[in-house]
Image (cartoon, rainbow, N blue to C red):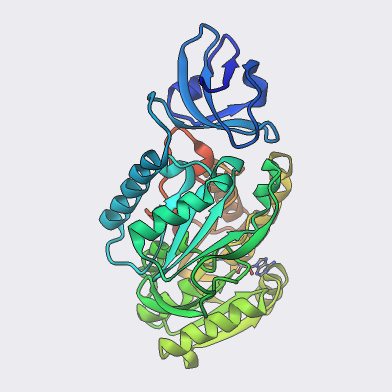
Length: 395
Ligand code: SAH
């Protein structure tokens, strides 16, 4: 039986020809057949040429996510080959790391599937109806490829609502594991698969913790704002910094950071502050606090394009405060994980804030997500994490 087909407008969007995987509802002229959410479909241009095959879901604005542009059977062997390719890539770019993202959705040509590895525990998220329906197959493939002790599903991500999928958390294989102690970056951290943040840890920052630590001067006073488990601050201490203020609004995050500091033997050199960063930065600046290294890694301030201007005001406010609090020669490491804020927009906002704060900056390095979170060049949306390191060059 032929697959149902989605026929695009006469003009095939250039994006798709260049490797983008998404078809928007507004680009569809007509349908052949009546696919259910999560069914496989063929995508054709107005002249009848097949462009690719992927998962359909009429409930989403993105009605198709392509899996392949080459005609082939999309069966368990197809997905097994994609999984093996994803695992081989991690072996190359992050060899031997116990915690890493094994499958990064579009970045591994498996749109809608995320698999994070925490030692011998795997945490799975399905964000499309097509992948959600295939979860039993993914459990079999992951057991065969990785032999995990447990596979958990953290299908409590809000994006599932766009696909009409219910929110679910549970054990797909084995038993619910207790909190684990795992090396992330170069230090041990408590990994809690029930933590509300991501799948427990911000694995996308793993390599950046070490990259930013390289800028910590001996004895430096560090502010790790929006610290979660304190990955940046604790790596800076490991690299020779003198003291780190670990700031987060979540008590649970700070409990994890305290535990990690203890395992690192650094508990005497941290101060944990449970506060709203906006309020803390304002009052510390007012009180004349000064730092040698400040890390800003806030959660996304905008989930919609419409809220970008307001988000930019929030970003600018914390950058202004941070820049004022840096000593001459001090370092700012800053990140944005907002899909709707471009690299260029982010960097311009920082230059703007530096102007207002009367600080001259030298850009030392641009950073992105760790390499186990690959980006598809044709899909700007997959490049959500942007970061940069600056030195204050006054004088
Ligand atoms: N820097 C961390 C990841 C940070 S994620 C790492 O590298 O692992 C964003 C963090 O900001 C979360 O831990 C969240 O609890 C915290 N957060 C959110 N809003 C906040 C606010 N207004 N003030 C302080 N912390 C906040």
